[in-house]
Image 1: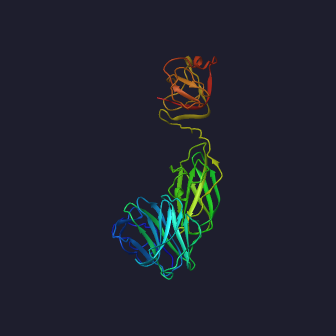
Image 2: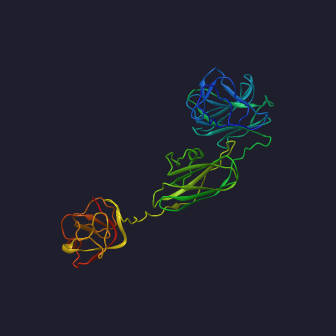
Image 3: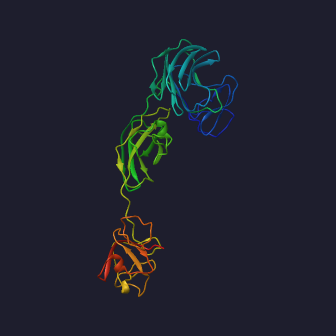
Amino acid sequence: MNRTDSFNRANTNGGLGTPSDGGSAWAGQGFYGIQSNQGYLAGSSGTNVQTLESSESDGAVKIKVNAFASGNIQLIFRWTDSSHYELVEFNSGGCAFYSNGGFVGFRSFSIADGDTVEVRFSDTAVTIYLNNAAQGADLTASNNLAATKHGFQLQGSTQLVDDFAFTGSGGGDTTPPTLSGPTGTATSNTTADLSVDSDEGNGTLYTVVTTSGTAPSAAQVQAGQDHTGASAAFADSQSVSSTGTKNFAATGLTASTAYYAHYQQKDAVGNDSTVVTSASFTTDAPSAPGASASAAHGVILATNAATLFLGSNDALVGSGCSIWSATNRPSNSANLLVNVQGIHKPGEFCGIPPGETMIFMRATGSITQAMGKSDAGTITIDHAVIQP
């Protein structure tokens, strides 16, 4: 019988209680609790073993280490009592295997916060895994081969763990999901459609959108980060209940920017897929400002080659927040200065993006002279803005 616990329940220092799989409660020694959906040691009693009954003696036990802090973290399997058990003790430099308290062997490798450690055991063969990768050859267990309780032990109150899982050999799942066909397609200057295919219809699917083609780790994708640990441009997740294509809609992207979509899935028993990455896609260029018939200062008033009338005394005719045609205009208006196609002239309002065609408030001066234009009549512009 498989056993799982995501620790997603209310904070408490009164024990781990009933795991998320709804089966029999955690049992053992020590004073454990829940903190921010993670398991932790609230108080020590010397032996701090916590186990779940599984009814199976062969399988795999794993846990995600969110914070090593001080001390070691131990995976317990085939536990009977404090004298009869199998134990793999992990620290930042690797792990050691003990049987009934006796040292069996050591494996050297680096472990960091966010990694998942695992022990797979079948009869006498014991294999250590880090993030689904085997660490060296099998070790040999000689004791407690029929015991069916499995769990973990912490040694410090600042250590945090998550996603405990025991998967029995009697049909249990130790295979991670496989993701394929990752895509990303820009749909505007700030949005994109994302998709990926999954061969496993359970667990949680995660995505992040970043500006780098370097894939983040599984833990970084789940945390909404890029490969450097910084927040991704976009991050999302969804529960998976079927195989096939899964879709996301990315928002909040930056215009004219190349992005990559990265995907990762954790199945219901804690198996992590490999991160897959889409080809690069580029968001659209910024949209041209839209027209507005009634607007306050600083708001676009006319677009798309609007023709403005050049009135007497070289004054461009307009009034308040409306742009008028030559045949439909007030008799008087403020003098304005026109900037056509980004040509900047003395006296213009500063701070306008280059390359856009604007009109600005101006109290004095000749538009004809400022623009170097000798013929009165009309001036055609692409965009018009009244600035305060």
